[in-house]
Image 1 (spheres, rainbow, N blue to C red):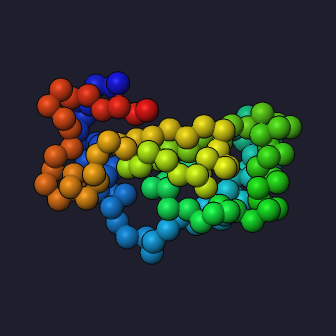
Image 2 (image 1 turned 120 degrees about the vertical axis):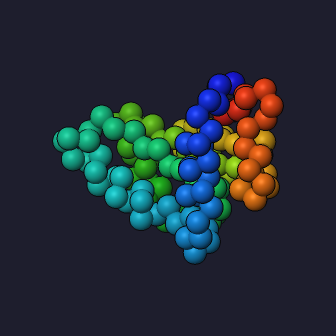
Image 3 (image 1 turned 135 degrees about the vertical axis):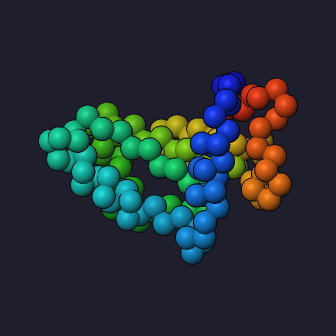
Length: 128
């Protein structure tokens, strides 16, 4: 549990995430960019954080991207973390990430955005 004292920041994040981006999450382009960036010397020690609502196709990426990610994980020690917003589980996300972290999965995001009921009375938000 974390203390949610800055509700305005969380509300701004939710407002941004509620924008329409055309539906679904195409992670291929972002992951190709991350793979290329990590291959550079300046980003060699980087990990990847993939933030999504979990609406990802299955399989989540083409085989060549999946193979490149597996290479980074196994040979370079790169960790791929997924931050799943508003859902408890996304199997496609689990296929590409070392670890998936849940954020606001106990909340109905539509209700939160429509009536402002962001934080429970005890000011505790569970990230896991």
